[in-house]
Amino acid sequence: MNLVVCKTPAELASRAAAEFVRLAKDSIDTRGRFLVALSGGSTPTLLYRQLVGTSLDWGKVFFFFGDERNVPPDEDASNFRNANKDLFRPLRIREDRIFRWRTELEGPDKVAQDYQDRLEDMGPGLPRLDLVLLGMGSDGHTASLFPATEALVEIERFAVANWVPHLGSWRYTLTLPVINNARNVCFLVAGTDKAETLSKVFESDSEADKLPAQSVQLTKGELIWFVDQAAASKLFEVNI
Image (cartoon, rainbow, N blue to C red; front, side, top):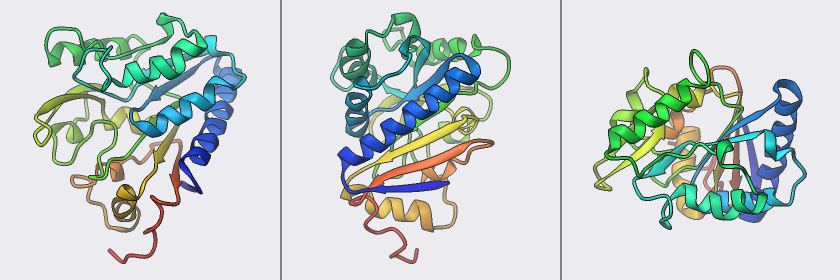
């Protein structure tokens, strides 16, 4: 695991964009394509805007989503909508390169099964994404793997609908077996509201049910945490 502390969210986005491009070029050179799962939130938006100005063979990049809210794809809260606005449209990414959660389908189970089916179409066995981008909430959740929710213990399915009681809503998420099977995972974490939780994730004994971000432990791959100084302000200072 690598920790990269950046002065500002802008620097974080710049460093993460450089890593994204490096991994993409290596994957395209090695395997002929780059499979990446995007995340939601404000920090990825800064990353997307950095990526628009980079040189990359975008026709060989295939986009997935680590999670999604149970909203139509054109609503402000949709992770797809934000990526579409700030990344896909500016780069003119073809629709057949974008694998979004089809939240317009009838019912959470159908939405999750549709994503499961498309991941299975990638080939036999557990999907192996080249890069998974993740954020972390102030409660320690990542993707839509929230504390004390059923998706945390799912070991057979690749994609599930996850009921989140304190939000009173469904979320859709890749499961931990898929995330931990990725070749690379990059966390993007910014803001003082994440500082205390980040210190617990790094310094406390494993409490995966309470801090799902701790469950991201790659089977065979590289894990990098890109954090800004505000988020890192309590690291290694509090003895949990």
